[in-house]
Length: 253
Image (cartoon, rainbow, N blue to C red):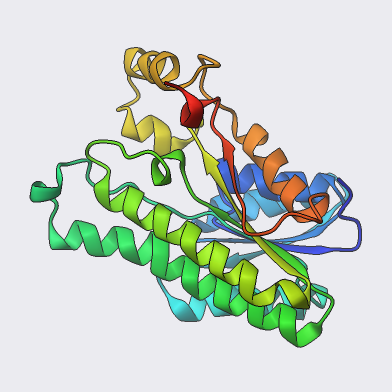
C-alpha cells in the first residue's frame, strides 16, 4: 500500500482513528494534511510524521464550520500542490438517551458534525479532485451502528446510515472521473470517544467486547487505519462500499 507522491487530507486527524490514519499515510509515503480542532494534538501528529522523515502540515479545522472545511482542502493544495486522498473522520455520539428524551440541541449537534460537516467535506474534496483531474479516493468513517441499531444512539445511527447513502451516491456520480468514494464501519475501537461512551469502566468495555464482537476484543485504531489506507491506495476496483472493521459485529447472530 504505497502512497509515495500522493497528498492525503485527514479531517479529524488529531486523535483516535484520524491520528492513526494520518500516521499510516505518512508511513506509506504520502504528504499529509492533518485537519483538526485541537491545535496541540493536531500539530503533534504532523510533527510525528515529519520527525519520521515524512511531509505533513497541520491546519485548524472545525467540521461544523463550512469555511474551515473548505480551507482545509485549499491548505492541501497550497502546501502540497493537489489532493489525492481524503478521509473524513469526525463524529460524535451525543447524549446516549432514548428518542423521546433526545433534545433538539442534541439532535442538531449530532447532525451538524456527523452529516452536514461530512457533506461539506465531500463536496469540497470532490470539487478539487475534479478541478485538478486524475481522480482520487475518499473514505468516510461511518460505524457498525449505522448498520445495526443500538439503543440510546438513534440520532448517531441515523447520521451514520445517511452518510453511507451519501457515500454511495457520490461513488455513482463521480466514478467516470476516477474518483472512488467508500466508507468504513468500525465496531468498538479503543479511542477516547469509545472509552467516554463506556464511562471508562473496564467491566463495560469487557462486556462490549464479548457481547458484540465475535473476536471478543476491542479493536485498535491502527487496524482501522490499515483499512482506510487500503481503500485509498490498493482497492482500485472498489467504490461505493461500506467496509466493516468491526471484529465480526455485523454478522453475529
